Length: 84
Ligand SMILES: [Zn+2]
Image 1 (cartoon, rainbow, N blue to C red):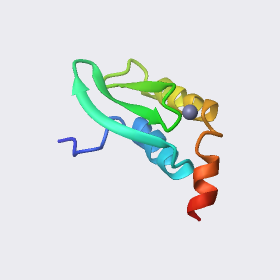
Image 2: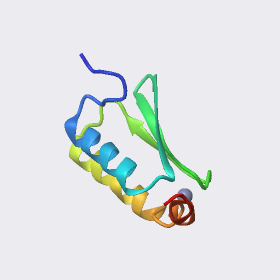
Image 3: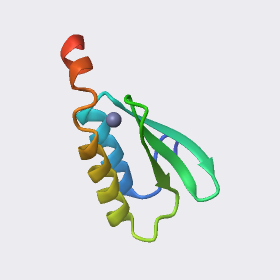
Image 4: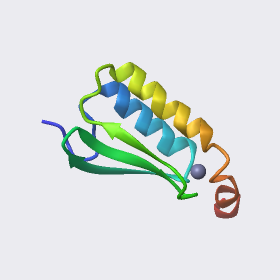
């Protein structure tokens, strides 16, 4: 059984856990709907990454998540400095 907030593929879980640590700007929302597992939102509100429930290649999908977070790397920078 897959628990709440956990993807069935460990590679995806690792990518999601990593992005939550890396940047507070990112929010992972779990919302099952068909092949969609959920999405990753950025605080800039300009973009979101749809997480596939059953990606053909979990490793590639995990890399796509990482690439997306790199694209939004700077978004939460100011908030992070304020908070700490
Ligand atoms: Zn952003």
